[in-house]
Amino acid sequence: MKCVVCKNGDTEPGVSTVTLERDSTTVVFKSVPAQVCQDCGEAYFDEDIVGRLSDIVEEAARIGVQVDVREYVAA
Image 1 (cartoon, rainbow, N blue to C red):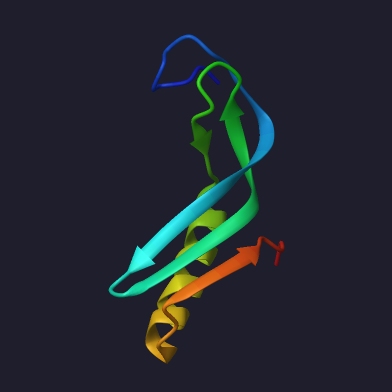
Image 2 (image 1 turned 30 degrees about the vertical axis):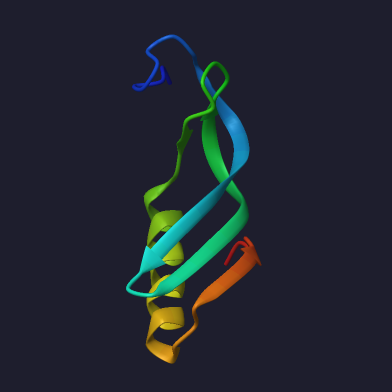
């Protein structure tokens, strides 16, 4: 697909790092599968991956985690 950010590059399968915050909780996910623009590096994630990451951050916030760094593991 054509990148909607730079409008020049095409996306290819790759991985990216995602940082999500919820209240006082910050979770960094490494090696998250994505479609990555080969020109500007913008990453696009599947809806199911975003939902899973969101669920993990919500749970971390609920139990009081402040900072967590994780390697992404497919369900």
